[in-house]
Length: 284
Ligand code: PAF
Image 1: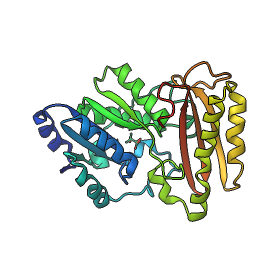
Image 2: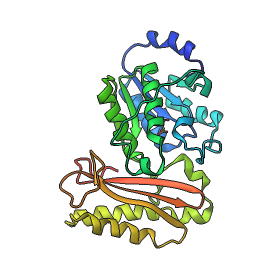
Image 3: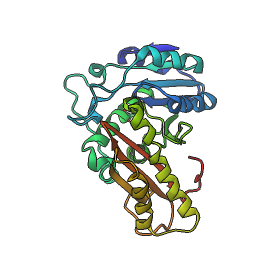
Image 4: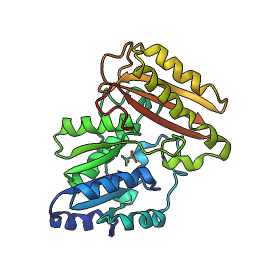
């Protein structure tokens, strides 16, 4: 496993890579969710590259960029047994050198949900993902369904810009009590951690109601709000039932939809989602 920090060094390596190249984009502080992407990539490719970069452009001025958890040694220890070929971990100055002035914006899909609460977040994501895809030129890049809107934004960008990488979305990995794995879960104190599974319980409630035939979106949103109201520690930011392709809020479910939730739990923001009426329904 070779760790690369410098883009100029990387540029000498990329032309030597042979066979199917895969990329797993991350911001580090890796957990089993990331490792599930790495394992899938390892099975499906000849060269596996893990990108580790806490991207300042996707954090708002009052967000947690400075305190976002970082532990390079731990990340490398977790990746070694997975037979990763390259860890590409550039510095902020490498990715955004003086004079950098390009932004990639995916207009409509970036507006609702996370985009409404985190202005500029998705242009930060799209810009860095475009740059990492240009640098690494992978056949496939693996993303987690947990960031459902991010998956749609990145897929749209790749399609719109004619980037040849195939975007593969992998199921959310959860703790035994249903909480979706996230690097930010380390921020939770024991009391907050104890109520965090309500998020997935709310999503499961919706999934069960849809399986029982409910198709009206507003009662489904009400079910999520009711479950989340069980703890005063949870403050709801959104409980959405949206079209799985456009992210427009549904009035009635006529096809694949995404139920998604964002909450504040103390100082921590958590998000999660499940797919409804999608062919892969039940997988995550
Ligand atoms: O999902 C993440 O960790 C980040 O948004 C990504 C895709 C690595 C871009 O910085």
